[in-house]
Length: 347
Image (cartoon, rainbow, N blue to C red):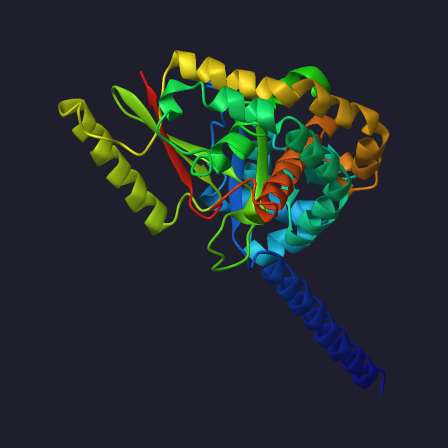
């Protein structure tokens, strides 16, 4: 009788164990179902020394962010203690994880879809004053734009995504925000300073994760071709880049030919910086005036256990300026945001 009871209990335990194991695996499968794009803010040779997409290192960071237990991660990937330890050592040596309460947490910002929804909602209170600021400065913005030789044959409507998003908020502005508001160097990792993030993206979405606008630069011997937008890596966008390069090289050989893309030199770069500076001080004041709220967003999130406020803010800012860009489009200040903007730097 005792043997029968023991066997019955053992059977039930095995069934329960297998059920829990299957549920854990299903949860992990769902968390990893969508792709995650690796994003970085860096300068010069400040960049990672490892590829997180190799050996599921990025997936381990994603699961740790979602507080999946180590034993579940090892079971899911069928990793021995030694193999798991080797992956952890790689991540630790590159300062991508830290020990926390008998587990590990990522020190890069993993932004899942739900995280992005929360951050976008929190960004709303900043979007309106930034839009008002841009509208109030619009006449000055236009006057300075029309003084730039590189854009003299390009209508402002055509270049509006580049000017009102890339110049005022992103590439020509973000260093100002870091210097005047954050006032700290970028996160140090293995002797390098850069910000790093993994952004979840919906499967088959034609735009990049969270619709964030950004730059892609392709350096050539005598020039750099850049594209600004949020669908930079589609086949269509890459074809446009090749077509633009062909037009640029044709212009070099035939100077009388026309080209529909600005060729930015050192003077143009300075003039664009002057456009960005039109809103810099007031933009920083907007953040300073609501700094307590920004810290509250950070402290109430799981990111306060993982990363610094500065790293949190810089990715929050990306979601914020994307929101502002889309609202400026609704106001017809920006036209054709779905057409990524191509421009050249002249070496």
